[in-house]
Image (cartoon, rainbow, N blue to C red; front, side):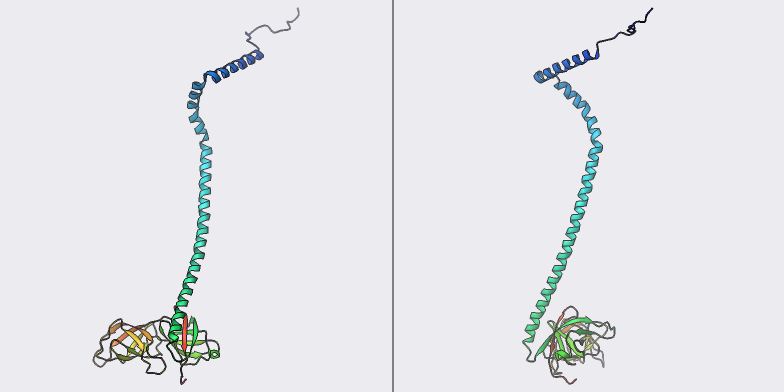
Length: 281
């Protein structure tokens, strides 16, 4: 007995794959035609979109999070770079403004010195402060004029704001100036309001001086202006010296203690004027 060439129909077999493909294609064409003409599937599509949209958004969350973080990092980096550039520009602008302000102040000082110079019959020499000597027992500065500029010991030094001091040491291209607040320098002065005369005496330790040998009955007040009297023949009369800062009334047998501050501070006013007068040094 020979075996059958085809297997026995153990299971019921449906349509072939080719037939199912044709049916599916035909159904798809029908549905496409109905949807195009009657929008048959629009409601179904809307329902499906409504159901699936939260799932899609949930799936896109990691991507959106990465985009947000990336944008945030780029924004911070951009702001930091911009802030760094602005700080650099501000530093450059600040430096330029400081230089401009310094030049403006120096120009104003030079104008004052030129106006002041025109009031003196004697000639004078312009100078500039180089540095202040680090000596705790004296108040002296160094200027950029010396013996080659015909500078001599004893010449008075002034600024646009008043008396600075006196030349006490001369080198080839530099000179030392003893300041008004040095204990070794004294200048005869005059107080216009009370019309009394006195002599300054530097404190040495601070930027100030005292008035010695004042009239015991003089009504000297804080704020009184002090000018050179010209009695020494060295400092021309009428140059501002300083201002009274405190007054301690006289005691029996003693002069009143009168403290004052100089009208100019060395190191702030860089431009100076050296008056050429006859000295005995």
